[in-house]
Amino acid sequence: MQLPQLYMILLGATPKGRNIEQHDIFFGIGNSVKDLLPEMIAFWPEAKGKIHVDAYRIVKKVGNYKVEVIDKADENKTEVRSLFFMNLGGYKRDEFEELHYKMLAVSDQKALAIKEAKESAFYKHVGFKGATSHIDDKFGVDVDDIFEIKDILSKETKSKYALKFTPVDEMPEDEIFLGYLPLSKI
Image 1 (cartoon, helix red, strand yellow):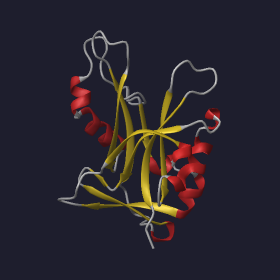
Image 2 (cartoon, one colour):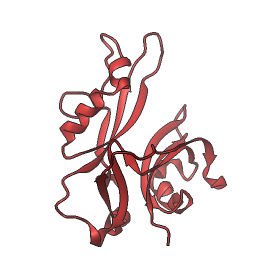
Image 3 (tube, one colour):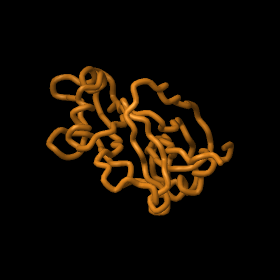
Image 4 (cartoon, one colour):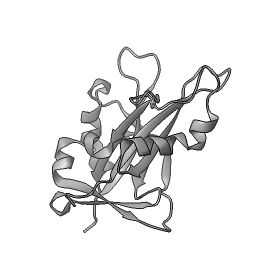
């Protein structure tokens, strides 16, 4: 039996009333992207099912940690580490755009995850005086968004699964799948 895995999926849609394509990040646990279709549609009801996938990643490694999906019954209740998702924003001079960089970090504190984000090449090199890179959220740091993955999984998923983090020295980086993929083609 194949073990379910954590998926990080970049969704795109142009909901009614919007002028340009919008994007959001969906996290789900399953055996394939296809398994997650009902959850993706429920996640973005304003799109009325007219959603496409622009990118996805099966999250197996973050930093120096192996990330595994386990049954909720096997969850280590004393685990202090969490998987954080951060959406960093920044600007380039003379470009009419806010650039974004999506980042994952395993940490036992939100503040340490933010510190790791502030050490990223994106944070250091995208932005200039008056238009600094940011991570919009709390802490006065401007972190566009920061979430613990366990908090943004669907209620049903949270009731069945938990995440396990194991330190690793060497492990291949996660593959990132890119390209426009309508849900009807999945």
